[in-house]
Length: 169
Image (cartoon, rainbow, N blue to C red; front, top):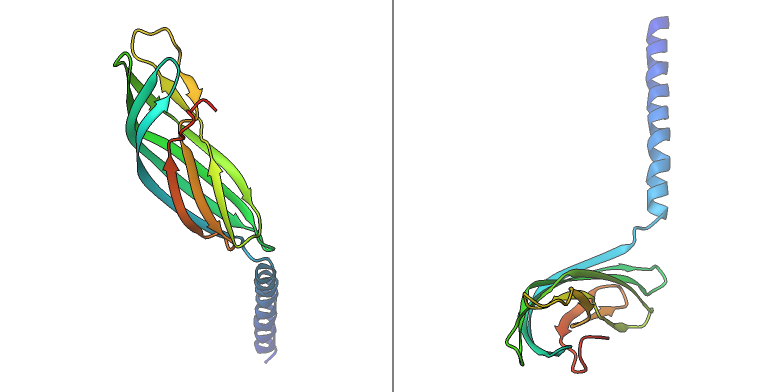
């Protein structure tokens, strides 16, 4: 009888200690809510004329845009906008020279707790001049990337365009 009570007591103590280990972790995770994260990626066509030095360049290519938002509990939050050029080339209007545009850029932008927040970034890429020129690749900002973020951090729209005023901002 004595051995039976010891085994029963040890089982009860084991059960109580296991409950003691699981209860605090369940209540701790319930009190700290995870931030709300939204993700959206799309690839868009680019075409148009850039007013660059030494000549205007007609470009054609693609841009991949990824937006990740993290909403704050009180409203607003931060958006990470990653832009990457893909197969983007151009032809000089004066010389007929072949230009390449390459690169990827990441911009982090905060948005306020308003109902709808339009965000615009100007990612930085490299313009590579025609072969035989002595101009090194130079950073330019040929694209405006726009996204609209709702108050909960959901991503309503993403677009990209070539600015009218030229890329050397």
